[in-house]
Image (tube, helix red, strand yellow):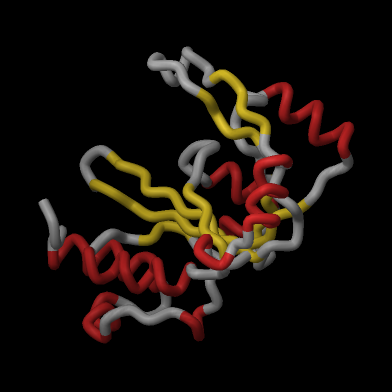
Amino acid sequence: MKPFWDITEEEAEKCLKATQWRPANTEYFRGGGFSSNFLTKGDMPVTIARVNLVKGLGPVLQIAEGYTVELPENVHQQLNDRTDPTWPTTWFVPNLTGTGAFRDVYTVMNNWGANHCSMTYGHVGADLITLASMVRIPVNMHNVAPESIFRPSAWNMFGTENPEGADYRACSVYGPLYK
């Protein structure tokens, strides 16, 4: 990965050749247009995140760091055809911890708010956790190593044994930064 301004004409041409421009699915995009369809290569470090709006609670953030993976062509094609083959496709595997929501891949998906996410190149979960505490959005699941996480020291007054529980308590007491 490199910044778009460092991509050469030759690299841009290769990217375009690896992309199909399919008619957008009018079920989702009533205005029509085109959707870029490509398959992401494997072994890239990425972070997925999702903000869920919970009635009576507000926004909560979910984070999973992991890697893109490449599936055998026949497996990819069968799965891709079952979703929406006009969309870009990235296959992702989270880093597992063996416990809690990150016990295994199935448990991650069972705890994830929906089948969509926002994906970022690199492992930036610790940064997202810090940002969430600053704007007072609790994090309800993540697989970021504890030694990488920074939350305001005031969060320690809300408990140190369960940092995610402390997130909820601190965010409840301090209230949302933006309303």
